Image 1 (tube, rainbow, N blue to C red):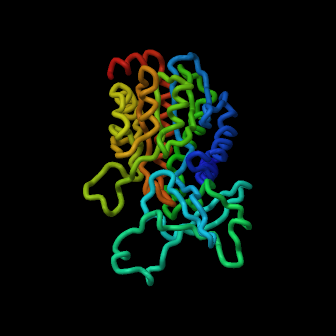
Image 2: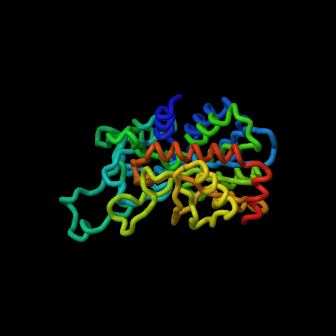
Image 3: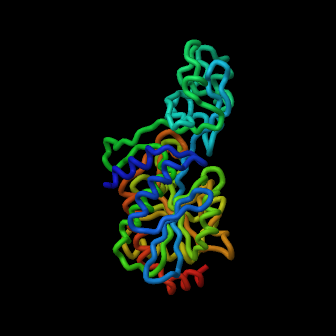
Length: 357
């Protein structure tokens, strides 16, 4: 499959936290071509690719789940009240299309509704509504009983209804769920790059579950693998749109994002320096960045006696919304960098990294 086809397939797949099955199936299909694939008991997909040596064990983690919603209840008139799954800002929700998946697997179109502006009090117009006051309209009327006709029930998952598209600027791609189907695609392309290459380590390409609700799949998969080194592949924030007060290097087209801080982890100094040196020697554009949230490495680096870890990503506009934008050149640069990491991370490099902590 070509890159654009792969990105389209993964971003359009249905998979909120706890309901990653469709994405997991796609990941297994791609990864089993060149690696031994298993799942842990929580559902994370682990592909093992052995090189010249069993050590070091290098884990690359990308999460399969996207943010979405869960049916909380249905009103007597057939409107859906819902719970947010993952971090949502209400301003990104009003009048947006969604898909509700019932037990049969039907993906039912709906729209997030709220009282019309014409009926609002003046103070209501000046503030965002609470998510609890919103609802999803799947076509309920007095002659169309939603519960009987659509078989929707509490606990059913809901995702944004958004299609993959290339923009007029052909370097830019628009889609839902870049967070973190972008990273999932990188796992697949990385494996394709090293399939016929003799690398000095054993690689674990790990598609984790439930990152958006607490890095849960990262915990169980790291316990299963017991890695010596770990990387999270995930989106970064693109700070190149109106509203940012200061100039930032975190912008589309500016290469790989190397995380120097998030609220869950201060990255391993020796590993960070190793990756920066690889990027500079090989002329791969990069920038250093921070995030107030956290990545899978926030849990992985605490596994057993500790795992030197680093989060890598690319600038992404409008994450945790119906649509986001990435630059395909940033994606290519990150793929090139992680391919070099695999080719260069041997036991000697591991020892040097640990000395540089």
